[in-house]
Length: 369
Ligand code: MTE
Image (tube, rainbow, N blue to C red; front, side, top):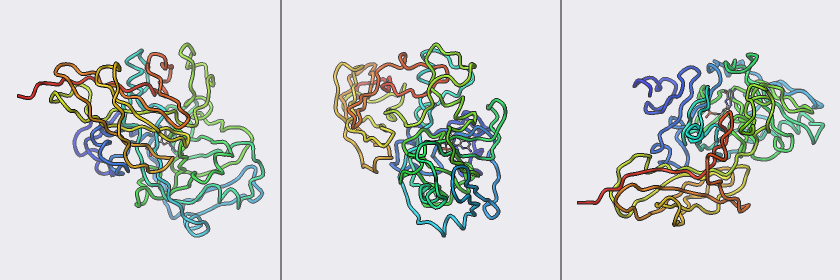
C-alpha cells in the first residue's frame, strides 16, 4: 500500500491499492467499489503504461487523417462547438482485471496482480467519434481507426507512444465518444485530459487517453499495445514470440464478489453478498447466482439499477452462512445465455488477461453470542 497523502494531489483517494507509483497504477478496495453505481472519480481505477503527460488544453490539437476525404486539425473549442454533446454511462474494464486469480494458478512474471478493482463505471461526456469521422469523409467501411497518444510507454518494445485501434464499424457506433468530462467534471490529467476516447464494451486499453491523432487505415494499428500486448495467447504460447494470439476487443462476461472480502469474519446466519457483473460488448447481464457452499446450491441475486447496456450491474443476495468456513461463489449469465466459465485454471494465459472465472471468496462465520 502507498504512504498516506501520496494520491490526493492527483485527485485520488488515499486508500487505493497502488500497484505501481510511476507509472501510476491503482485500484480501489472492493468496499469502495461496491458503494456506487457510478464510481466517484477519486475512486476510479487508473492504468498507465507511461508517465502521465502534461498537455496544455489551450494549445492541444487533434489530427484526423488517413483514409478520409478532409483531414482535420481540431482544437478543444472546435470539438465543443462543431458537434452535439452526448453522455454515455460506461464501465471500463482492464483486460488484466482479476489477474491475481490467474497468478494463483501459475505465476505470471512482470505483470501486476490486479484484483477485482480494475473495473469502474463513469458518466462520460463528449462528442460522437462517428460525427467527426463522417464530417472528415471516411472513405472505407471495412478497416480500422487508430488512436495515438504522446505518453511514452515504458514497457513497449521498442519504446513508443501509446496507441491502439478499433474496427471502423465500432468507431462509427453511437456509443463511442471523444470525451472531455467524467461524472460531470473536466477529465483529470491521470484519466486523459484534455480529451480521451471512450470505447464502451471494449477492454479499457482501447479507450486511449491524451488523444492526439486519429488515423483511418486498412490495417489494425501496428502500435505495440495493439499488435503485441493485449492479445490473448494460448496457455502454452511463448509471450516473447510477439504477435501470436487474438487481439482483445469486446469485454467477456465477468463478475466479482465485492463484499464480504476474502478472509473476513462475518456473523453466522443471513449474510448479504454484493458484487458487480459486466457483460461487455453491449450485451446485458441477465442473472447472477450466489452460493455459500462452494457451488452445491445457489441463490439468485437481485440485480441493482440498470444504467444501460454499456454499464455494469451491481447485485446483492442474502445467503445463510453456517458457522465455520464459508465458501462463497458467484456466477453470471448474459443475454446471449452465456455463463461465466467456472474454473480459473482453464483460463490461465501467459499475460494474465480475461480472468472471467466464477469469483470465489472464503469467509469465516462465527455464531452470534
Ligand atoms: N491511454 C494512454 N494514452 N496510455 C495508457 O497507458 N492505458 C489504457 C487505456 N488508455 C492507457 C491509455 C488501459 S490499459 C486502460 S485499462 C485504460 O486506459 C485505463 O483508463 P483509466 O486509467 O482512466 O482508468
